[in-house]
Length: 468
Image 1 (cartoon, rainbow, N blue to C red):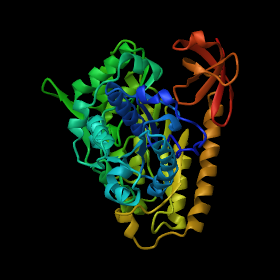
Image 2 (cartoon, rainbow, N blue to C red):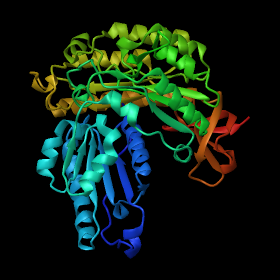
Image 3 (cartoon, helix red, strand yellow):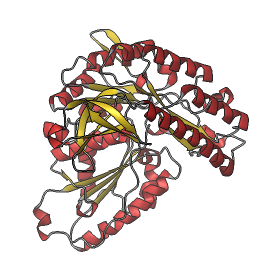
Image 4 (cartoon, one colour):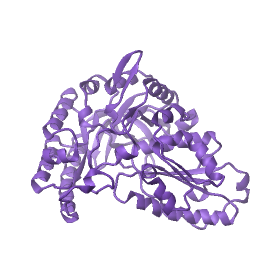
């Protein structure tokens, strides 16, 4: 899934704690690394801690509790966590001299994968919690505050969703017009390059009633755009009143909720792209014409080595069916170059997929061995020099296609949901149906309104528009 944040920034050492702080509400600072699901999880932990008396702070120096919600996808993820802990430890030590306790917690996928090692290497860490234990975050924090070093990495996904408290209406409103809603977690695909099955566990789907209840709460609080999340979101399945549901059927039902104007979902796997989901794009105006469907590579030989369960042609056939259902679909993808054994001919097959699909956006990476995954033990590892050169060529082609897609939007009329102020006075921002940022003239009074606009100009990462 898409990466959304960076490591903890450098922190100031000169901020003094208010002497009245001992009687104030405790404050929690949460830093989120990685994908949209981690953003969702961070918000739910904040919700739980708020009910336990904490208030959120954006100032790490002023926090009584610091949580790092980590991602394990990229290379050296754990080392970045240790580096961040080292900086936070200085804050902890400073406040300790003033008689103030600061609790440090590591959550997320690095916590799940390396919990015991974190506790051994980082004595400043008080709490380690895996992604399926957040329903107990308040209890774990309370134990840590009493001096116990807490580690919890059990697999309790059903219990997690059943017991996590819902945010208040005020909290939901404060987070804006667009919201994430996790419907599925985990992965059964076991791609040889990926750690997700080992950090998030097997594929588990939330119940229909849980999802509908949360969606209705979001709509009641004024949320107008909902993005469904899952490691393999289109593997979601459920049942209601004895009837089996898949993601397409769930989207039909969510489309009926008053107040929700836009629906999205990410991230999908090609082998779970059922016809009912494609039909939903054809039938539901609220379902945005955007599909993030990773292919990773274009060579069947490499796809087999990756254990992707699909071929190049099968992937291209899915794209064709999706575009037959809705001809304005924007396609996004993920690519890994330099997978063990990848030849120049294999790499050219990947470039061929890109040329045929014509991507509107994409994420691309050099292969990095993840400890514990089968790919790390494969022979014929590609040198970093070769992988870097291939990545440069691949990204140049993708940038060219993204520019062409943005240019193709010029002259189109779209409905633009205004989400926030722009960087400049007299500007407001929204997102196009294809997920680009769109800038138009306006003021804060128009936030939450939907304007009919015409795209007038395209930049590399955003669009400008004029009102119609």
